[in-house]
Every structure is written in structure tokens, then in C-alpha cells.
Image (cartoon, rainbow, N blue to C red):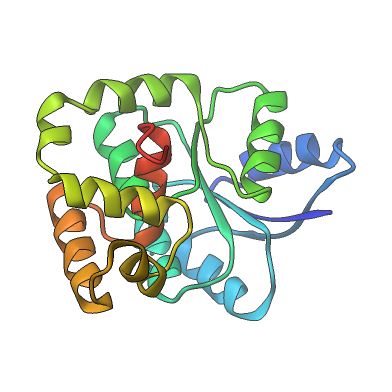
Length: 206
């Protein structure tokens, strides 16, 4: 059973979405929240597999809540569910470590598929979102990383920690940390999971 926390400030939308998700026997919305602050409180007291979260909400928006979830290393996957298809929102979500980004106008079956894929450890982005991400990756972005940085990014995306990467490349773990910090700065990414998502989405993990 995939336990879902649904975060949105519109009660009618939450009720409709909760009903749609309840039709799938593998998914259960175990809690709801009206904003990011309520979501964080629930995450500190209960376990969820997937957080399905809107962006624009009062008191604390979804993007800031996502940032705090990653900073506090709370154990959950996060899918941003939004009406916004601008690259600024999408890239910000990705850089802060979102596991998925789905537009609110997708069919219910697609949202269910997204939840299942993210719960299994994969990422999921709506087709429109993927198109925007692909357009954003320019040759300038690729050449901004050195060959060593590309290699480290690939190893990070394969799940290796700093010590293992250091052993693979015959360098110190501190040097690996420095490279990762430089990569994050160049790409505008703030978390390690954000680096992983970046590498997977742009095919740099192979």
C-alpha cells in the first residue's frame, strides 16, 4: 500500500482527488494538509511514501516546504502537482529535489501512474514538463561542467556516496565534496537528490 499525503489549499480539489486515488487499491491518502507548514508537521509525526503537493498555498508554499523537507532529510518522495507549466517553477522544483512534477490537468490514470513510479524510486514528469526540461538543457550547460565533474555527477546518480566515489577516482572524499559543491553551484541545484534527478532526466547517469 502506498501511503500518500495530499497537500493543497482547495478542499473541493482535495476531496475530488482523494476520491479518484481511492479507486486504486494500491494507493491510500492517509492524511491531508492545507499548506506546507501543516505538511511538515504531519511528516514529523507520520510516515508517508509519497507527498503530493501543490505549489501556491497560504502560510507556506509548496516550494519552500519541499526545500525544508530535503534540508531536514525527511524520508518521503515528493511530487509537485501544479497548474504552473513555466520553466521557472519546474526547474526550481527539480533543483530542490522533487521526485516528480505533474500538471493538474493530467488524466487521473496518469497521476496514479506517477505516484506508483515515484514510490518505486523512479522520477516522473508530465510530458509537457519533460519538453520544457529538454529545451532548457543547452550545450552551454553541458560544457560548463569539466570532464571530472561529469564523471562525479554520473557516479552520484548511480547512488555512490562520497567515500565510494573517492575510491573509484583515487582522490580524497574532501575533494569529492568540493567537486559536488562546484557542480551544484554551476547547475543551480541545492541538494544531492537534485543532482541525481538532473543526471537521470538529462541522460547523464549512463
